[in-house]
Image (tube, rainbow, N blue to C red; front, side, top):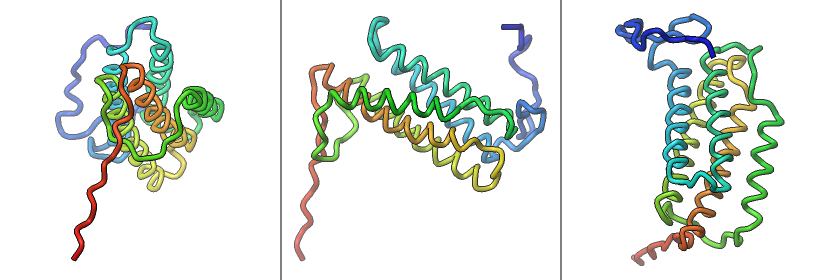
Length: 190
């Protein structure tokens, strides 16, 4: 990789705007920047999850691949060009295959579960929650920029949140725990 940054700060954003990869400047509150920020936050949370996993953990390469995919998705959002697409149907299908593979080893869900089940599982649940927010932001952006958002990127985030839910269940069991089941409060009778 070539030297891209010779200085980390540019002062270009001091007045509330930022540059996209295509050179256009937009407000830091623009829906594109909001979506990009949520994808970045999700990637950071996956980095935290990766730090919880041993180097030889079977989930480690999966998490690393997803982090790279999220960086690609962030690149798509930053370039803002309908001709620049990295997340393809094949990438979404890969996620589905991994999701099905991991889910096949789990008992069927009979109740809602709460986030928890150990540190790594809890990080996966948190990442799942942020993934859903990133998906909502991408959908909101697509509503105002119908050509500038890759629909496969939205599908990727949708599938990824499901995969992270399954990863949390896998990690709960691996840490010797179980799913933390929701215990609904019974409504009071009037």
